[in-house]
Structures are given as C-alpha cells and as structure tokens.
Length: 440
Image (cartoon, rainbow, N blue to C red; front, side, top):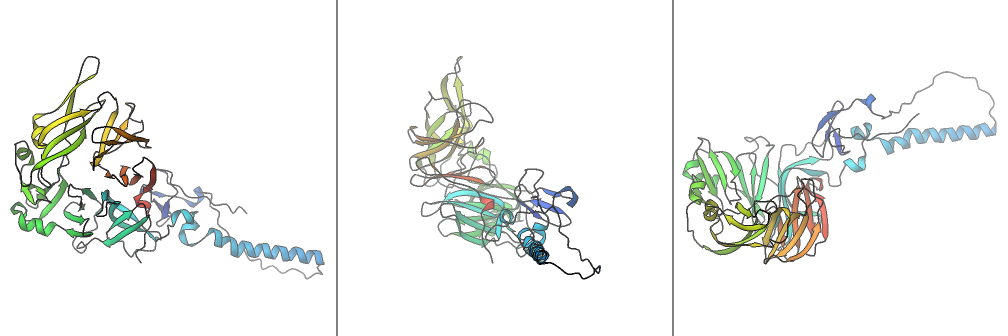
C-alpha cells in the first residue's frame, strides 16, 4: 500500500499555505484564490482496514512462525495507530496538508485591510495594521464578524496592542475594503470600508472614530457620510462625499474644510503658525534627481507633499535645470529650491521619508522596469552615507518611516515589509499578514 501524501498547492501562486473550506474546496491564504481539488486528482492515499471473517483450520505453529506473526502484529499496530497520528488529523491532513506550515502558533493572523509604518512616541519604528482575524482552524468562527486593529513591533517580533475596532456591526456589514495613512502629525488615519474614518493617536495609543465629530462640525455633511477617500497629492486631507452628494476636503489635524481644494491651493494663502521648513522630493524625469526645497508650512493646513518638478535637458541629455510649475509653487508654498547630485544618473528615484537630517530613498542604477532598487541613506546636503541593494522592483512615494537612531521601515509591495538599521544592514524582512497572534 502506498502511504505517500502530497501537499495541496494553490494553482494561482503555487503556495502550500492553503486551508480546507468544504466539499473539496480550498482557499489560498497567500493570494486568497479559492479552488476545487478532486481527491482522485491528487496522490493522497486513504488508508483502509479490512476484517477477514473466514474461518481457517487450527494447525501447529513453529517458534519461527510465532516470531514472524508477532512481528507482523507489531507492524500492523504501528500502521493502524501510529501512522495515522503522524499523517492525519481533522479535515486539513485528510487532504494532504502540512500541519506545521498551515497552522501558525497563536491561532490567528490578519486578513489585512490596511497597514502603514509609523514612529511611536518612543521613536521606535512600528507597523499599524487592521483587518479581519483569520483563524488557523476552519471550525473557529468566533471572530468572523469582527475587525481588529494592532501595532506590531518588528524588533521584538510581537504585537504591542491588539484591540477590536469599534464599529456598529449590526448596521454596518463587515467591509472588504480599507486603507490607512500616516499624516504629518505622525498619527495614523484609517478608512474602514468607504465611509468610516478613525484616528490612531501615537501618544495616547488609542483609536477613535471621527465621523460624529465631522458630521457635527461640517455643515455640508449634516446628512451623513457616504464616501471617504484620501486627497490626491499627499495633502493631509480627505475628500468626503455626503449622503446628498455634497463634496468637501476635510483636514483632520486643523479641522478646516473647503469645497474646492484645487481652487484654494492654487492661490497664495497664509495660515496660523506658518514657518519655513525643509522638504525633499524627486523630479518627474528619467534620470531623476533629488530636490531639496524650502517652503512655508503649518502642520495640518493645505500643503502638497508630492509636487510635480519638471526638468530641462540639453541636446546631449545633460541636466540643465529643474522647476516647479505655477500651480505647484502655490500648492507646495515654495520659497526656494536646489537640485542635489546632478552628476549622478539614477532612475525611478523614490523618496521614502525624511526627518532628523536624514533622507531615505530608493533608486535604480539602470532604467529597466524589472531592475532592482538600491536603498540610499543621505544627509540633508545630499551626501550619500550608505547604499544597500533591495530585492524590490517597485516602491511608493513617502511610504516609509525613518529614525536617525533606529533606521528605516517600509513596504515595497502589498503586505511585505523591510527593516534596515541606520548602518544599511537588513534587520528584518516579514509579511505582516503572516504574523501570528492570540485573541482567546
């Protein structure tokens, strides 16, 4: 009898991290693909024991035959009782799952709706994440209709906080969508579904709903909120649509609103606590260059963090100049600018974050879509302090969190995260949706 078992694999991504649903249906926990597996299409061999009721004559048995029979009985006992313990338990292993691979210690992982790196009050780099708990056991449906938020410490490899997101589940079905962002006050703002806004305060370490406050104080939204989206161009604002289809841009830090953010930001404005501040962004060109610019800034008021910066080249494709267009001059409240390191040709430059006299960015040395990035650590004068190769072909603007003492934490793709220390050494690589945790 062939007792081999084969692990069921996802036909979409090839992962073995799958769970049994019902009626030979499986779901990949890596890419969420659902697929059907016929038992006779696998090499899973089911074990059967048959009873033989035929009577046989009793005949004398020699000692050697007795020993042989004893040996066969021991082997049969091992086959019937020990082998099944090794290869089968519940539905998972009946279909060839590797229990070690598919059952994570802790009992739950996140079906992530949104995650973002941030810097906590102690200047440590953390990940904020929220989503629905995935139980390691299919039979466990205790938290199927709830959503949790958590704070993960990659250096300690543990969740500092795990709490249920306070939503009226009776009137709000479990949403499949969500997103979260770190604004310039350092706090995390999350959209649950399409219409509920929360704030995670890094100082108090609490999450609070903002909908009631917004509806009470914004006259255009008295009918309630139908839809919330992050405003374009990295403004620390949300575009909100009311139940009567009125639209406003809402700035949660300063709590101001306007009904046309483009018209407001193309005009010269002044705000409380205005002061000069230094910013960095890359040019909109290939090769791309790092621009250091000074601007008038007041936290939480209209300010564009990702301006469009054009570049002029000569006939030999040498850099000549860079400039903000008229709209970006006012939207970014520009004072002056300087292009750094124009002699170095790099491509797909992506500024991840800047603070404490350090700029973290990704660059490619060749202009190829599938070429890998290098992570670079520069001072505010553009001097390269170190560079490290990345196993990544894509990065997102201003998507990282840096600390001069601790390093940089960022997500190159989906729920993948990379943590480099301030010397350019990779400290940790992880998938936030694979980190186990306990709820019971």
